Amino acid sequence: MINLLANTDIPSEGNIIVNDKNIADTKFSKHQKVMYKRSTGVIYQDYKLINDMTVYENVALALRVQRYPLHKIHKKL
Image 1 (cartoon, one colour):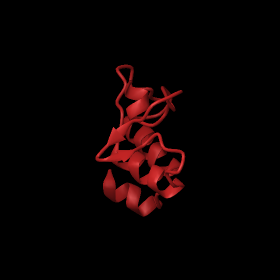
Image 2 (tube, one colour; image 1 turned 90 degrees about the horizontal axis):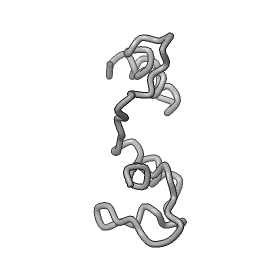
Image 3 (cartoon, rainbow, N blue to C red; image 1 turned 135 degrees about the vertical axis):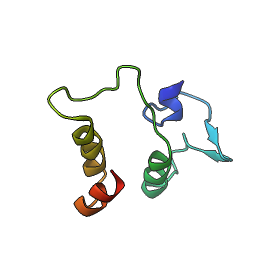
Image 4 (tube, one colour; image 1 turned 45 degrees about the vertical axis):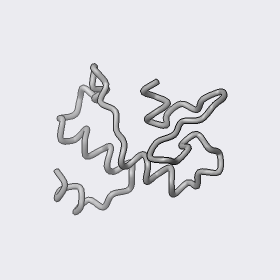
């Protein structure tokens, strides 16, 4: 259920309504999906961190994957 709300899994049938929007809708634009994922996050119990990296580096990596500029990453963290 958490993966469905985080939009990492797609339901085989039915709808997922969040803030009056169906996030499972195939017509959801790429921009809408990106904006939804930026406003929604999941913290797993095992944290899913890369062992050879510091916590700062792990968080910075997630922001780099989202194409944040380095100066904004340093400012955010």
